[in-house]
Length: 300
Image 1: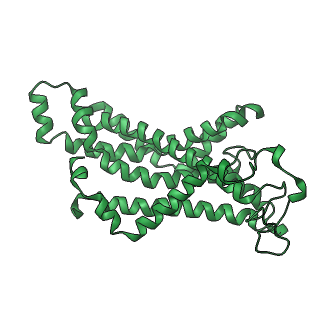
Image 2 (image 1 turned 90 degrees about the vertical axis):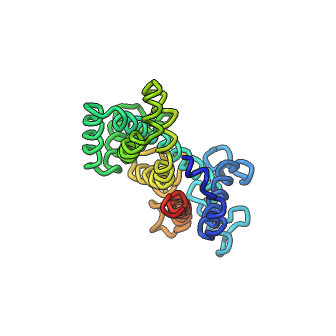
Image 3 (image 1 turned 180 degrees about the horizontal axis):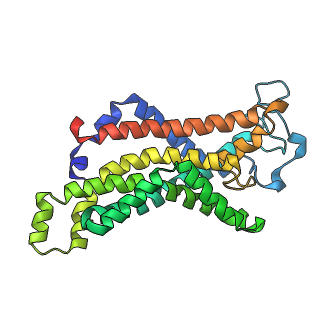
């Protein structure tokens, strides 16, 4: 972590146009998602604000387009642009929460495995190896499907968001655990750790005071890239019907709903949510690539 603080990451950022552009795009998406209620004149998921007379309107630049709905409306009269902003809010929230959960589980188990070794290391490593043999999407799909099957329809409306976060977060912890374990095994042999042990410091003090801050660099990079993967997983689960309910705004549910009307000529209902998803994940991945290079000590 000390190397990270000494590294002039700001200069690297200012010298990388792709990082600047992607961060501007991502910040704009986050801003629109957070302040969607102030930017748009309609909450597309409030039935009281919808009018069926405004349904199936094309984008404003096409014939029969309406200036009130720049990107058109769907079959329920929902503003597609407003739906994008509200849907992005939930997708970003689910992605961030699931990444934090993966980090908490993976880093915690990796610290224990790398520092205490022995049977703890064997158990954590074997569990990680076992889960990594199964694709993350399949793990998330199984978890979400099993939990969803045990709930009533009323309960699904309120708790499926948390189920999706749990499913995605639990499916992605092994990579954090493996990276943390390897870093801890290296750091635990450094002179400052050996000196702390010689001075009588407790293992938990050494672990959280000295070792943990120095293994966070790699995990920050992985978490940045993992955020884009988590958003894609949420969209995939929702599109397959194992994610959040259709009545809940997310990019996945918007794509799922729009796909039903694609061959009816309402291409804008599915195209723009898909583009928003691609733009969000692409911006996050570009930032992740830059952060990986910026935090690589070999490039310092």
